[in-house]
Image 1: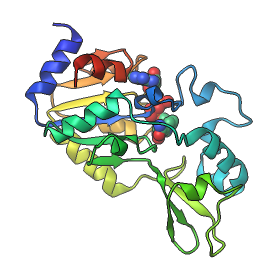
Image 2 (image 1 turned 45 degrees about the horizontal axis):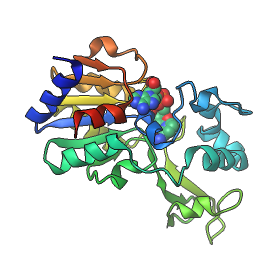
Image 3 (image 1 turned 120 degrees about the vertical axis):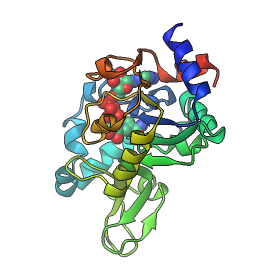
Image 4 (image 1 turned 120 degrees about the horizontal axis):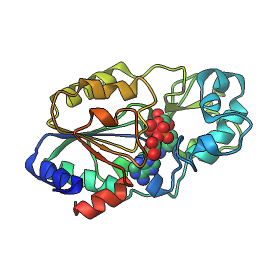
Length: 239
Ligand code: NAD
């Protein structure tokens, strides 16, 4: 059996699949990741993305933060690709329990997934740092410069910046799903950003699947490794 055939069989036989993904899941929707060749780390900016989207940079230089964030992190035209859509369907069929994502783009929900654990937050949620009022995405996309609340406070995206901690309740829930999963599919992540990347260690089963274009440091731990674009893989599987 080929890797793809084995994966298809594991998916068809299970009702306890968990998916854990990163930026690579959305590149086929036109959103650049960080570490691929055409990812954000290899583009020319005054500062590396890790610096700009850090908490201290946001505090020091909000104008530059929002310029980068608006231009490079928010793609309002992006639509779910075959991977997002397949995962949404697998959940509806009762095969997949949850999607755990490092992405902030909201494409899994747009594809119909309901149980989505957003480890790094979402561009779709924004709040005033002074009065706590909540805003949608337009508050950021339609503002010029630093988005401001009617009370005068800065509207901050509800995304986890570098140097900020993860929501412990979401992390705990992710650990529970992963530690009880029968099949764990990890896709489109370099597994380089902690603590999210450490979640893989909680898996106790023997059907760990890694779908990533390039090799990751964890390939040797996986029971099945596929180095192909993830949308193409799901399309070929026919889900
Ligand atoms: P990363 O950029 O470190 O790694 C992405 C990985 O996906 C790479 O190893 C690359 O080879 C692989 N990849 C790219 N396209 C692929 C495809 N079509 N199919 C399969 N694999 C593919 O991303 P990361 O590990 O998620 O970590 C970066 C951090 O940046 C995350 O924490 C995330 O929150 C954030 N981020 C989010 C978005 C988004 O919301 N779409 C985009 C960029 C960065």
